[in-house]
Length: 284
Length: 264
Image (cartoon, rainbow over all chains, first blue to last red; front, side, top):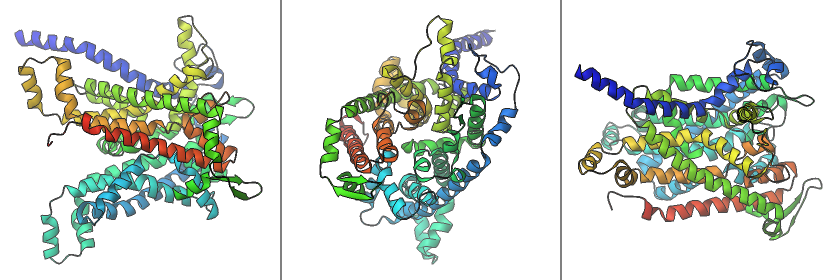
C-alpha cells in the first residue's frame, strides 16, 4: 500500500516536468508538423484564412508535382554526388593528418592545430569572394570542383581532423611499439592497427561532413550556374511561380522530401548523428 | 587570405575587365556609408542576442533535459530535430509560417491582434530572425551541454546536498565551474555562428526594405555577386574576418578568469 502511494506521488510530481517538456518540444517540432500538414493541402486550402490545421483532403499529388514543376530528381542526385565526394576527400585528408597530429606529433604540430582551429571560427562569407575569384580564373565556375575541393579542404577536413586527432591521441603507445617490433611500417600501423580503433570517430566525422555538405547554400549558389547542376538547397528556393507567387503546398512537399532522408538516418543511427554534429557543432 | 586583402584595395570593373589600385578607399567607404551603420547595428544585435540567449537557453534546456525521467530521450530528440533540417528548409518553413495570412497571423488573430508585418523590417524582423536561428541550432548546444553535465561527478553533487546547499547554489557553485569549458566553447561557437546569418536574410527579406534587415554576411554577398563590386566586397570580408577574430580572441583572453581548471 505504502509503495503504491509513494509511486503515485513520484508520478504526480513528474507531471509539471512532462508538461513543460511537451510544450517546449512542440515549439521545436511544430514548424516541422506544419510543413507536413502544408505539404498535403490543396492550393486553395493553403491560401485560406484563417488556416486549417489539418488538410481536409490529403493531396498526395503535391509530391508528384515537386518533380513536374522542375526536375527535382536531378538536384537530389547532384547533392548526393557532391556529398559523397566531399566525404571521400575529407577522410583522405583528415585521417593521415589527424594521425600525424595525434601520434607522430611533428615539430610545430601545436601551431598547426591552433591555425586549423581558428579556421573553424571563420565564416564562409569572409572567404567566398577570393575563392570565387580563384575558381573563376581556373575556369571552375559551374563545375563541382570548387564546391568539393574548397569545402573539403577548408571547412570539413579541419573539423574531421580535430575529431580524429582527439581519438588517435587517447590510444596507448604500446600498440605502436608492438607493431614496430613486428616490422610494420608507419602507414601499415595506421591503417591496420589504429584505424579500426577509431571507427566511432570516423563515423562522427562522416556524419558531420555529410550533414555539412547537404546543408551548404552559399557555396553552390555562388559556384553553380546551370539548372542541371544545382544542389537541393538551391533548387528548393526555385518553386516560386513568377506570376502567382510561391506554390506553398508543392514547396512544402519538396522541403519535406529534402528533410526526410536526414531524419531517417537520424532515427537509425541516432548516437552517431548526435556525436557527429556536436563534435563538429563547431561549424554550425 | 592574402588574396582578399589584395582585392580589398582595388576597384574591380567586371564589365571592362580592369582593376586599379585604390588604396584605403574601400575601407573608408565602410566607415562613411550610412547604409553600413544600419547593417552593422543589425549584425551586432544578432551577434549579442544569439550568443547570449543561445548559450543561456541551451544551458537551461540541457538542465531540464538532464532529469532521469522515463522517455526523456523523446524530448531530447524533439529539440535536436531542427538542427538536422537544412537551414534553407527551416527558413522556407518559417517563411510559410510567417507569410501574410499564415498560421502566425491566424494565431494572433485569435486574440484580436494583427495581421502583424513580421518581415517588413525593424526590430520585430530582427527578433524573428533570432528566434528562427536559435530554434534551428540550439539543439546542438543542448547536446554539448548534456554531455558536459553528465560528466559532473555525482559525489560532488551529493557532498553539496549533504552540506545543505540549495538547488541554485549547487548549480552556480558546483555544476557551472565543472562545465565552464563547455560553456565557453559554445559561447565562442555561437559568436562566430551569429555572423553567418545568411540564408535567413536572403530568403526572408532579401535584406530589405532597403538594407533595413541586412547583415554583414549578406552585404558581402550582395556587393560581390549582385552588384559586382568585388573590391568593396573584399574589404567587407576582411573587416568581417578581423571582427570575428578580434571577438573570439577577446573571449579567449578572458577565459582564464571564467574557466575553472582542476589542475591549476
